[in-house]
Image (tube, rainbow, N blue to C red):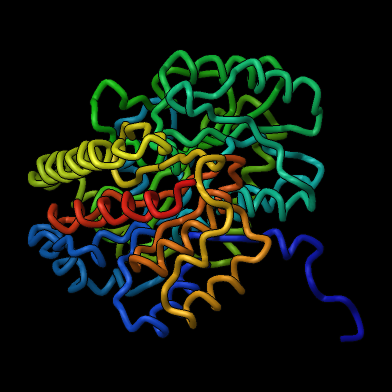
Length: 427
């Protein structure tokens, strides 16, 4: 090319949750075995049936001509009014819908001044971290989540990083947290808000899993505890019902009237949405009917109960390996597993019996971190696809799997296979 057309930070965009799928497909060709997909949240693929009451709502709206039309740029007006009617902190004008939260995240970071940084947790969901780093053309600025303290953040570390990095303009909080499974206390959230207020920051609050905590007392929304700091709350329909293909996410903007600069920034995000024309119309239209359906609350409880059961089973089985650290998640869908890298082999590809498979794994794992090597080896030995947490910008050796499996016998077998693999690679 006449000019270098590649973005300066192009190599820093990673999404290991899907990148490892390509490795899994290659292994599948060699072994001719079906892959057990534990890498991504998709309850439909895992066998969860779509309930008839949900299908009936969608079917009814599919018959309406309006669901085939463009929607307003901010989203269907009636739906925005529905969401705002039980929230005295915002109006419908403070709600903007997107085609999934990836689009929202991309625009929220992309329309910041390039010298303005966001401090986010480590580990962090890669969509957040890749988008922010690409926006800034710089390495990440993070605060650690501590596995020895139920994944709580070090609040002193957050304040020091904010204090001594004047480029930081916002703090990202993911609560409930993906990937760790943590749910932060009210006190922790209040301290983060105090830091934001003290240093003139806004807060990005990703709470797309907020209805999915195992214990109702952990269900804490930021709107219930703060009132005078600018912040953005992120929401997503498809985590509460098994409809990931709906791509239905939105943001709620709080207190933009309290800061002219923040309001101008939000306006730029909105106008970028106008350039796109609109978000998907059908899931927007059906959302109030889903939330108001008499079956919705009980259905959600049953799903949470199933995932809580799986969390208990996972802790029970994986604790058999002393080299593993399991911190029971406080909400549905994911489990993170830490391991002691000093007590396992650094290179265990030679244990693979199939020489073609050994050659392939050896080739792709050169210079890779130990958690990625483990995930490749687990794929080779047991056809189980998990996610190495180095893909979540983690400094710790560990992996993430889901709690989605509907068949308890199969779920126990998956966990027992993971235990067996760890026993093979122990020093």
